[in-house]
Image (tube, rainbow, N blue to C red; front, top):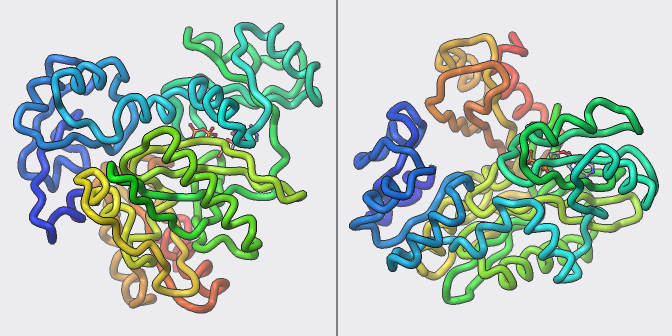
Length: 365
Ligand code: ADP
């Protein structure tokens, strides 16, 4: 989808991909299949690139530092990106900046987890491996002393972060884009609805969000982007509590699922603005094109061929925007998303949920 954003600008991509079947490898012309964890591969790949950016955050920080030392422009740079790679580093920095977040501490054993709980409001406690998690993988909820979940995260041999389990009213995302010039834009704050730890639906803008809270969320995201020196798209995932607090949960420094709605619902999509920022071009208007946009993720289900259900979805809803990723369908895997925009939120939610369910195979008519 970032490649697609580059086409009208005449920007050519060279892609480092794990396999030739990856989504981006199916559409980019110049593909190198290789391992992003291998510095020699990265160095060879970087030759001839004007600038390097990412669609995931797992390239080792030390390799990115080495590329920078070689003189390769890496955006976002490793000193910013490490805050999206390592939840421990991110939490420490947000504390330093005085940005509200769940109470947290690095822990080293189940006994340590019990001590952390006792220092606060007790259990439940959320444990997270500091690196490598996604879509709820790498996150455990510990309900009390002796809960076997307390031992799980320590098996991976990486540092573990303990957090208070926030009793949030809902999850929000404040998405901003920042360029090396220091220009920045803020998208409307969205609500993100998770099912089984996976993002299911995003509503733009977040329904009923008070204007002062929306501004506070946008200002927080812009401040984080500026303090951390982020270049490109930054998603700041937040918890909103009943009493109106906004606590930062996660950072992502790349086009993000909470920004997929912008492809159809905003004047400039997150992909276009990410690309413009990475190239230090002026940024595009982030405002909404309609009062509401709803994005629903399509998860892999029973259909090995996701294209067969197009007939029904397209005929039922000519305004529906379908974005499929060309991935092999595996149950529960994100294989695409749909967007709808307009004036009637309830109607848009029904249509987005119907299409996502039909494409998955859980809705049959
Ligand atoms: P990842 O995105 O790496 O899977 P997150 O830190 O975003 O991990 O956690 C995944 C989900 O788990 C969040 O979207 C939220 O629903 C829940 N969660 C994470 N941390 C907390 C917390 N401290 N309190 C309550 N729920 C949490």
